[in-house]
Image 1: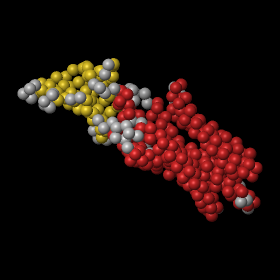
Image 2: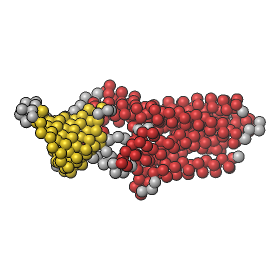
Image 3: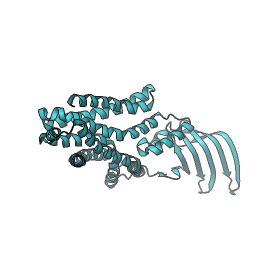
Image 4: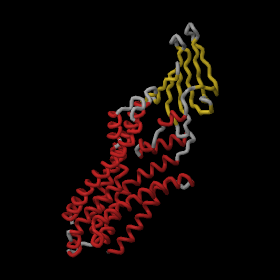
Length: 356
């Protein structure tokens, strides 16, 4: 059985790599073309575009893992079926369930690879990609990991520790200079909410004013108005996006948002989707087994691949679409990530029973 596992795994992995190369190349090219629309904005040049696209490859790879696993399994098993090797295996006393278990071993190995990419590689490279793009397109705003955002606003330098999902701000520091470049004031605020007319309402304000002799006067106020050219639309690009976080960091960020009375459902959905993606990868390979046994002989590899692609796209659309559905109608995000997988698992089990 070990020899069979190795042979099936080798065949499937070869064709999975082919699927990786084709789909990843296609998505990378589409991403490159999409970025060309912003070419020339600020200092966003062709080198920045290439670097950005290169850094987004791990995220694309992670997102495409279930589809690639499905196509790789379909192609690999189809070749074995057309060469009558699967028939020989079954004639030798190897059951469909044993073949299924051999394929699932490959699926679990790929699921571990997907998990490692999603936890340790894609979040870091995606953050680097977004930073490269925004730094090139908006040079007046600098983002540092440890100190938040630094913004120049007329004669003031503004430091924003965090932009929350509702576009309110946490821990703002405003350092303002006069026309002679002398320090005029230092302002610290626990939080800020945008009202209207380029005006922010600061909360928990500590202000230090300096006169012409640089003598300081400090005072604390509960509320204060701050007029700035910065708007929520400008700052929205610096929101922490679910794609930029690993599952572990998503869980921590969800707790942080809940502490700040923010809506956490989008991030909860992203968390459970990341948790379930390795399961989706193994599931797609599981579905390929009854699919190949039923269709390859009568339909040929070409048609089987086309139907397989449609099946993979259907899973992707249903998975994403159901996620948006649960957000709109207040269904627990966990169900949004689990129900599509549960449905396709039932479909796979029913198909497997028909050929076993």
